[in-house]
Length: 208
Image (cartoon, rainbow, N blue to C red):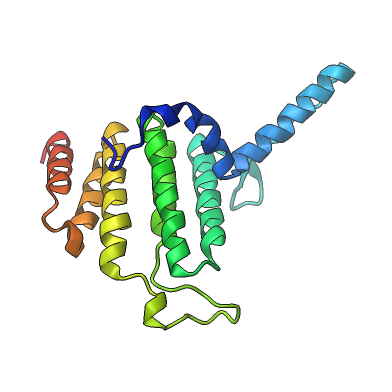
């Protein structure tokens, strides 16, 4: 079960909430195509639609594959997450990350493992040790910095454990093992029973 999973009373809203978190390339394409389809139906005409394309070395284009579309959507989510927290002071960034982790837990609880992974990864993108002031300089005051131990215990360790569990659910065994390795490299995760167990399961299923 995902770390700090929320109660079932909040699960019914998870599907709609996840759509509001980020606006991906696919979301934009789908909205545009839906509008075109609606207008085309009204006009009884063939209006076509938009699709994401990949530019080839010779300058020609081809439709993007499902994996390429997913990669573009993932990059959009990570960029938006980075922009959301870029100017936040460390303590507010920590609170934002905790909120994101809970949103990931909601998605995990309803079986949306891939979506949950993307949300969990925004937590890791957001949690660095510095914030930027208006001049773009890192603030050095110790009272503004979130201690590394807090970041590891409250964010990085539970997020990595959840990522490993999602990866196991999706059959991404090598990724599951790597997430556990990252968790156990931290001081907070060296003796983690869950990290050991999930890494062991991934290795067993990989035939190691």
